Length: 215
Image 1 (tube, rainbow, N blue to C red):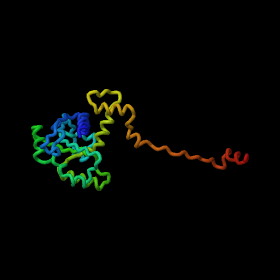
Image 2: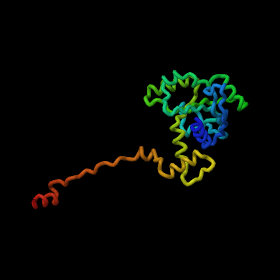
Image 3: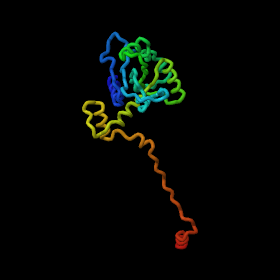
Image 4: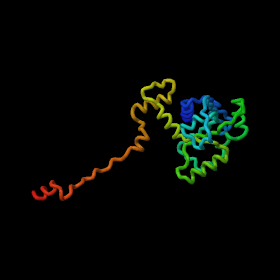
């Protein structure tokens, strides 16, 4: 979990957020599932009309002002409706008592977006919509897929920079320098080569007639 939290923290910091970690220890008497992992504040949010989408992408972060963030790094799991229904402790972070403690940290009572970082949502449209509806009904206001977080960090890292103050970014830089990451968009949208068609000359051309006469 510590590695996943580090990745998410770097993600928000790379977009200019101030990030506060609620705890750096695990109490044997506390229910760790109810704790909030991060409180994030965007000092220069971009004002725009319309609500944020439920599934956030990297460009959407500029419109986010402040949020509570919980990281669920179940990387071998998909947040299907069955998985969500069978894991009620997942939603403890949106309980009023936990949420009020987070609001007291900011001290002004302004709204906080409740964000859940998830490994993946279901691929099929029906199951995906069911998962989103269930998450909304429990009080979750936005999710960020872990793939979005990783893809954003990988794209932002430059091989010719030395990220000595971040072990994570330095590791990504080394992997990128040795071509362990491909350009996903280039691979995805690269046109396939088509087989060249051999066009036979019409019979009335001189070349074709000469070849026929010589035969």
